[in-house]
Image (cartoon, rainbow, N blue to C red; front, side):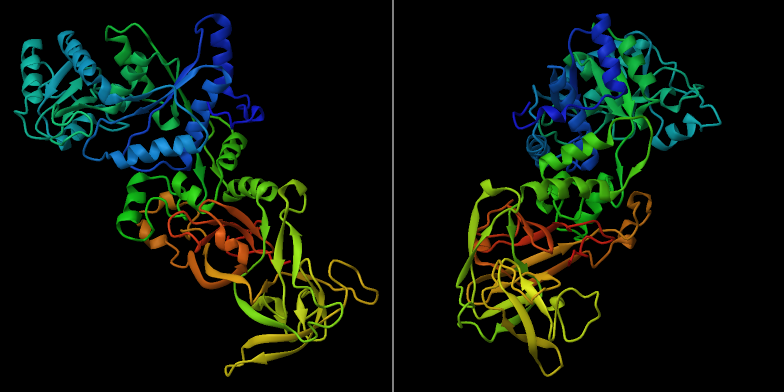
Length: 563
């Protein structure tokens, strides 16, 4: 496990830790061995993060082991790009595997166990079409019926399975099924398919195989081979535990792992279907699997979420058997707390207009820079020198010619404090031909920088940036990608995409020092929100800043705090 994980991140007590404690106490197990077994057919998402934190966290907490195992049994959908992204995501979250394994490492042994089932009369080659198999399987209220090929002899099944292996059947023309019970109340036990034909080159085994084992056959045997003590999956596999146990019980393998099920992570506005995520990527709706609006781990990373914030989120939601949907605000709260404690502050103006200090240069209003703390509560983070001059930029939303008493920013004949600088009073404004304010003239109160001056009580504080020494660059505001908080339920995912969920601001102005920010650096733009340097579109000396999260909870993450 990574040394960066803190002791207080120990997994809270839950029904799985209770089981492990009892297993260790009773002597049923003398160690803990878990695994994280993703299929490399897409990028990992927030739901996977929960499984990663649990499986690797249990291994950490009980001084055990956790393997990263790639379930690479379907070469049609799998790619090494996904393998590399999964490895990167696990490491980025702060975990390290005991070993990297692949289901394909066990293809020879899996084939041998399939032959064993055939020899025991517990598996047969079926030549029904996939549609016919579904029809014969029955429904939840109607039992299935036996395939006409179910009672073939062992010798015939051996010969036909060898023909499958040698590529003498077309895809879909034959498969190997376990012989269990077509009348079982559990559909997964109605003679499930355990091998199918796929004519596709495998990333690791090449063209050696054209028959590939199914997940339910592979998974339990892989657990047994690796000596997994506690095999954890989500509740949709609860019924499949019967098949998991059946396979292990009917082959000659020593270790018998046990499967435990927990509720999956359902998060508002988060899409976790790889098929639908792939549609968004291939249709160009999003900027790849790592688009900051997606709940993929790489998307969250690019958005500015930290490993610690995601681990804390998974810790808070806990491990139960109860299905529920977690509010997006719960995730945002975790990153907000992390960045509030650790992100340096900076000033940025997203929609700039000029503020001209008419009495700049006079006594008491002549500062050319200010030394400003990088964090108000952490002096060890040091200070930065920010230039100051006669002409500044302020945000257009921070000035009104007239406004009611609730407006706590700059308005004509009223005063505000410039953050860490002078008190100023607006005296006039300039407008363009359309009537839009482009500049505000003001007078600064002498000697008011960082000090209270008798007779002057400004009602608000606004940020600013020096016109003569600033970085002008791009800022991207992100909000939820979907208009429906439960996008997974949508039949047409493209119909609920919010086309305004990404807003690019190309002429934002920021403190000059931000020009040197590096990919992944995070800042609190004062009074705006938390932003991070985009790892994909930034260049040296030209960082692009993505909105991570607003300063406080709001209906839209682009609705940033302004007080």
